[in-house]
Every structure is written in structure tokens, then in C-alpha cells.
Length: 190
Image 1 (tube, rainbow, N blue to C red):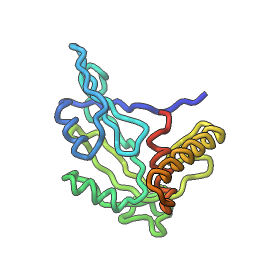
Image 2: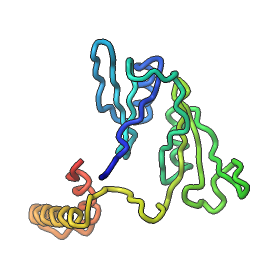
Image 3: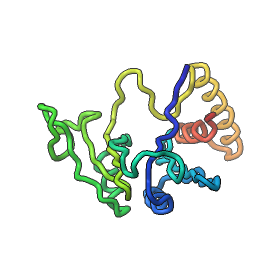
Image 4: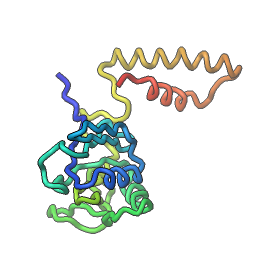
């Protein structure tokens, strides 16, 4: 049975301040629901299947007590620069050396899983950016389909839709892989 991580609850003191902070980072607002005695705000980082919840009446954890939640990126330097560009106090890039101790800079050979940067939200909940360029065997990236048959069906649907696209434009589309990728992403079952 699949068990997918959907939401991480963040304990915060001021939901509006926290919402503003994460939206400034480009996180998508999925919900902001007031139940009278509680409020749930849900935001999702760009490209993530998992979201965060915060608000009032959600947790008895101390605000700022969530530590080291990972955000995976494919370019640590670019991700760090983007966060800094949004005014976030983000650490310099660092890695673990041969002894396991943290050392400044990106991993010397830019090895996957090897470079990090960190930042905190206004309450002190901490995030760890980790650069992953190649997944360990068995891990899936990008659009996820439950089976080979589902992926095959998605490709067939994209091919049919792309055929209609080419009929409408009256020409061969040399960038068909880009078109397929976007179509499959837009039409993937959640």
C-alpha cells in the first residue's frame, strides 16, 4: 500500500506573518480556512507533492520547533541565490567532508546528496536545502505514474493530443518532447 507524505505541520505564532513569508518564496497557497476555533493555512513549495500546514489550533508543539525539514533542489547555488533574492537569511552552501563534519562550499565533486544550505522561517522552523542531481536506484523523480501501464496510457493520450495539435498548426512540431512533457504534467492524475 502506498503511503505518501502529504503535509508537514509547522508550529507558528502568527499565521499571517508566516503565510506572507512563504508566499514571498513563491509557495502556492492551497487553502486558508477559518473554523472559528482553529485556522488551517496550506502552502506548497514549487514542484513539491507535499505541503505545509500552519495556523491556530493545529498543534501543541512550540512555535519554531520543527528542525531540518528537507527541500530538495537540483542546483544548490541557484536555489540559495533565489532565496537570498527574496530577502531570506539563507546560509552559505556547505557540505560534509570525509570525516562527516560540515565544511564550507559545495561538495568538491558536486556529488549528488552532498551539498546543502539552510534557512529559517520567522518562528525559527528550519529548512535544509539539499542538492540532488541523480537519485539513488529505486527513487522516482518528476511525474510519477503508478505503473508502466499508466505511463504507457499517458504517452498514448499525449500522442493523440499532440497529433491534433499538429493538425491545427499544419506543421511538424520539432519540439514535441517539450509539448508532451507539459501535456503529461498538466493532465496527470493527482
